[in-house]
Image (cartoon, rainbow, N blue to C red; front, side, top):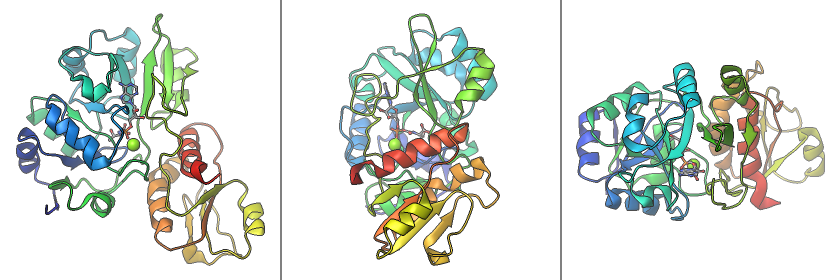
Length: 323
Ligand code: TXA
Ligand code: MG
């Protein structure tokens, strides 16, 4: 199959209506999209990604008002957060209606649903009359894509079309939140909308339920996600350089160069120490340094607040399998 890249929304629409898959841009990462109401299309998503069937998919809709078509109950707090952040990188986990096939949610009675902030994809969602199931458009276990080129590198020959919306502005996936029996907020994945922002709007402290293994409420939070092929070590970079003197080292640093290592083997996420810029560059940095055939990639934690939490979470998941 030839994989084309372009900005033709009508072509994307036709493919999706025929049950084919299209990679779509969002503000977070590129998604591998198919008609969420068409089980054959959903099966193709799992197959192309090589993703286990127990790991459910987020559905994408054009507006907050379309939520009620697919979920049984929309908590008042979700509306509050929607007014503050949507369209944008927050996903709600809510009890699903029967209209959503079980295969989308991997059998769970809750569906993850979001309104992405990207003009091309919002226009596409407005032109079709079904939601789009879309996991990140990377092969299962690899780094998420933040450009059409990243998607092409991984999935060419496997999907007919990549809708090119340029580089993703946020660069880390959406924050996933659910609600307990009393509608208290549970964070299942840290992401593009920060915990601090959520707490400010709702006036309450969130709780976390971020499972690190396949578990019932967030089965996708597997440790091996986001991994580069090159082993990634996370910690104090000076110490790690010292411990790995005889190896070819690549470095992802927050804001500075390390003179012991050639500059071309280093990626500074944000020279000015801006955490938004760092998030935007993170997956590009991992992918780029994964191509230079280093023995190891060294990376460091950012201050663990705001978007730094999402960056640290992704870095941690990138390194795990090499422990
Ligand atoms: O920013 C994003 O959310 C991107 C863009 C493309 O929208 N999508 C994305 O999808 O990150 P994915 O499939 O790579 O990650 C979705 C996460 C997985 O960890 C999955 O297990 C979890 O959401 N998830 C999806 N549906 C769920 C459900 N019904 N219950 C619990 N967890 C769910
Ligand atoms: Mg993913």
